[in-house]
Length: 126
Image 1 (cartoon, helix red, strand yellow):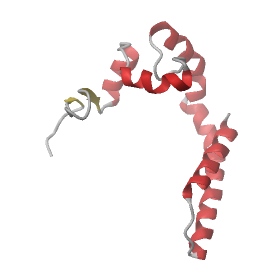
Image 2 (cartoon, helix red, strand yellow):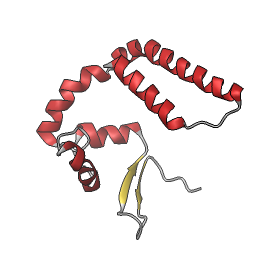
Image 3 (cartoon, one colour):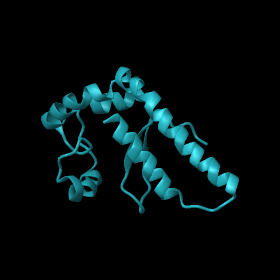
Image 4 (cartoon, helix red, strand yellow):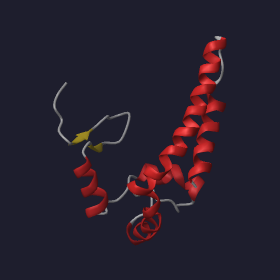
């Protein structure tokens, strides 16, 4: 496998548009924090029906900065570490449920269980 480095150009023509792949924290920081580069148009088209262009994924410039500063405290590492015990508790319950199915040797759908775990964690941390 070739060594592509931390930032490289990927052209998957004709299946996809060309893209710049950023595989380093420093490169990602430079492209998202130091310089506000335009977001990929496909993302905006994908999220528009759900968000009406009001989401952090596709916002640009001053509007993005305003909303990002509002949400920043919730994503600080200090705050996130306070949430770990609760997330762990919900995850352990999920694991117990999975072990119960394994002991019964039954086939079961994972979708409902994983959605329940997701809702439990979101409900706990918000």
